[in-house]
Length: 177
Image 1 (cartoon, rainbow, N blue to C red):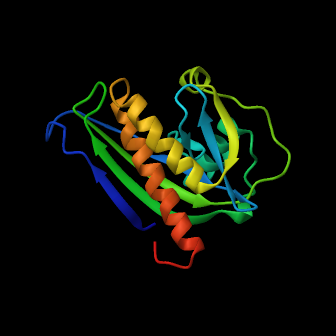
Image 2 (cartoon, rainbow, N blue to C red):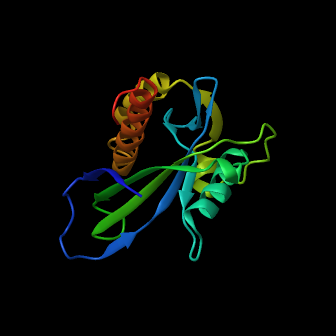
């Protein structure tokens, strides 16, 4: 899968302890809108997905994580890779946090399953929303200011999501990503 871009904050100790966390995210479109997880607590939007478990393929993680977070059921035959983003910054507990986020286009069934949120996702009141990319980008910019002091790693996550949303918009207009 091709590298789309790298976000390297260079705010970490080189050669120190590292936490590596691969994750998979789904891009599910419906009538010009994109399925996103809306944090009611902070007001940001992110694409549904999450961390890979040991032994899982990207596709297995995509199907599991999208269902857990959003209740959407990915249709396996529709999974198509977009690419991945590499993120590196100072970790919360380790010297460096390294995350490769693998993005896939896919379709989902109409029927929703119940969400199965992690503790932090429930605390942030994740809610499935279908939104226009511009709306999510704007909300994320505002949320970055709110979370900068309290959750600085969220700023990097929101920068990443906004860049992906902009790429999708450019693809829809026929421009190069």
